[in-house]
Image 1: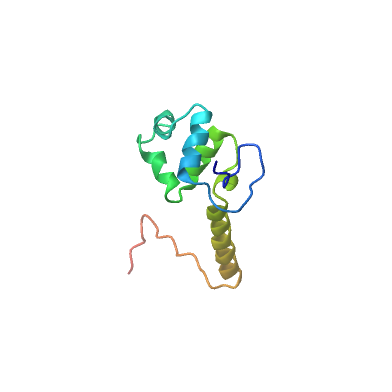
Image 2 (image 1 turned 90 degrees about the vertical axis):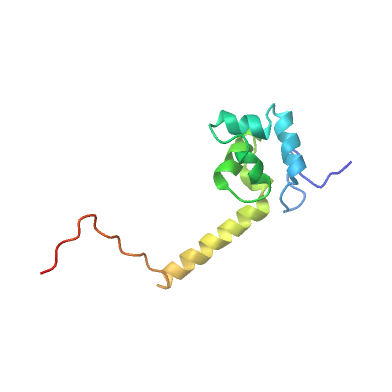
Length: 112
């Protein structure tokens, strides 16, 4: 039996993202399918199936809530990468390397 993923109650054995089949199995144990969960949240029926292959924070949160564990436990690698990107962005902002673009006025004043 493959024990490479954490169970719903055990602490993760590794910091690798769960295999998509393990995610689907955990959803089934909780009484859901990816399709049914997508429709339940008024999404395209295939929307949440994409979460198993590529990052989508909202979809990850919906799946994690259905399983009953935090998204960081299912996708620890994605979560770590997200935190690293945020930290780099904040560091650049603190160093003044990033500036926000000016917002354009909806009604620009006429020039003389």
